[in-house]
Image (cartoon, one colour):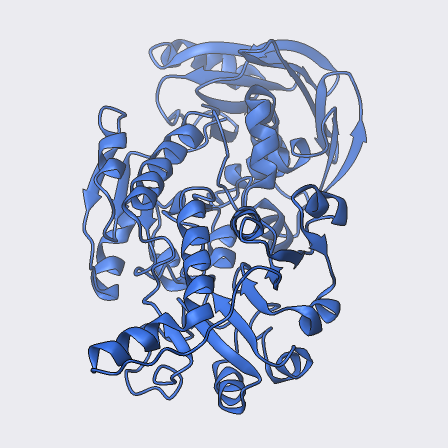
Length: 491
């Protein structure tokens, strides 16, 4: 099963040259155009199979709609809130990030901000530059408790670094078990139990509807007086108005923000001007090392997916992962679905008998809808597209040949590890290789009379009872004297 064409890729944000170098000699034409306006992006995006962005380019639903040849969107970094992932999935477009490239950079910046808050270094620096000599007491990290919200790669590195300073580390993550956290020296606490015990809180979760303003007035009320808060994740996780109120009241002793709800924030923002706020301009991933890593990794991940080697970094492709492990089986399922459409184009339920429910029936439905002319149907979009088109499946596990049917049409196929074969059409056994363009016609006198005139185009004639499958060199087979049921490209 072909995963990506990936002939033309647009890089629309500033990125390290390692990204462009990684594509050289790999059959991909790369265009580097950072700083495009939305209008300019909409004008040129139809040309491209892939786009690589950082955080400046917004890949919105209307951009995805205009990108008629788009197969993949890559974020050279972790967060993808500048990409409409739902719209991409509906269009059958892969969304990919580089989950490990800026991990160390973001973790180190978090630790730097934690330490800066202990002595409020930003204020002390400004005062000294203004001729003031204010030797104000700070606090030590040793013996304090830091609460880590989000125990993924970044959160766990922060925990390890802070443990070296003698801090107690507690944390919460809905996808991490207490046992897994304990292995890293982190005590797992529910959020309600974490708020009142932490001297420091640091956030490492994506911005989702469920995490927007998760740090709000109600939460601040439950926190220890004098808590210090860091956000190097995404703006919007903290309710900035509530944070300002609690900085003013002293409930929050200090806050360090690398991200904001609006970026850049207004220079006259009361929050930005607060004396107990330390602010940096979204620098979490801004190290030379991180920029080099994510630039190279996104290109390598694009190529690995194109070549069927890995789905690492894909955020919306669970079905694709299964198909990638058994590509010939996935291709056979898709081909049988396409042939099924030529014989019964009005099905609403497909019956599938196979040995892998995780992706096989979905590949059959994708093939059926592809033959119907719905090109957006693939293993990214199939659940939504099939639902919209009123198509579903019934599945039965079997160790025999893969079989698909609807109505009175039944097809079976197998593969030998390399080549797919059609082994049965209804009750007629066959052994027809499935490749290239084929046209399905009714068997009978008209066909036999026409075969001599088609000899220059037809490369194979395969009789299967009431139907005959003609393999041919061109995309279509022109003949108005045949009862043609359909033509499909089984590449």
